[in-house]
Amino acid sequence: MYNSEVPPMSELPSASRLLRSTVIALLVAVALLVTVVMPAEYGIDPTGIGRVLGLKSMGEIKMAAQASASTVPPTSPAGASAAPASSVAAATQDRRTDQTSVKLMPGEGVEVKMQMEKGATVKYRWVASGGAVTFDAHGEGSEVKFSVSYKKGQEALKDEGILEAAFKGQHGWYWKNRGKEPVTVGLTTVGQYTSIRRVE
Image 1 (cartoon, rainbow, N blue to C red):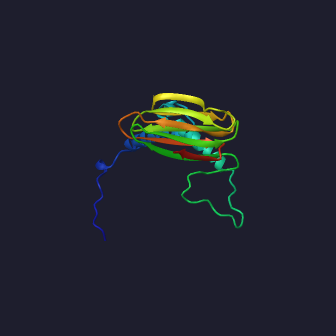
Image 2: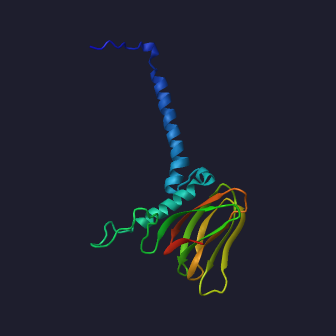
Image 3: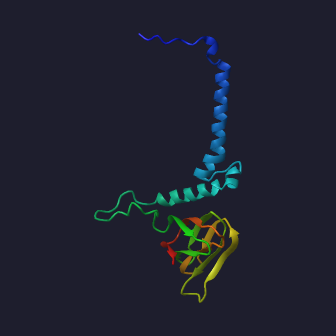
């Protein structure tokens, strides 16, 4: 037999206090759903706060990646080798997604290139952590004598958009750290390319 005492009624919360707490918790949950979860997970931003916080573009990239991944067959043919578990790329017939990270020491420049066909498009977003960078989005191929620049910038912390290959070849970004501290650039790409690599 237990001798626990039942608390007096005066110490128990009233029905109105319980109702008020429940309503507040519900309102907070709805606010988080609309301002954080929907933009970050589904790219839906009814309030505009997700775009300001950079969450909407994350959701759009995630939804594009899920759409492309949904076309991958659920099983591999007999005898086919499975992709390595450490791979961060999810490739389909003509679309894939990658997460690429490069570290730039002070004064260092780094290039990341994708192999693309003429007219192929890639949706991208990159963010520099630790400082700003100078960048040049450009392409190189056998059809042109010199590299063709798509977009340039200085003292940039991030950039996003759609890169369309003007010709068959390697297309991507060059970043340079002109600061005094190391900078890490995180790049997300979703689209039509067969490979992506750091160019030494």
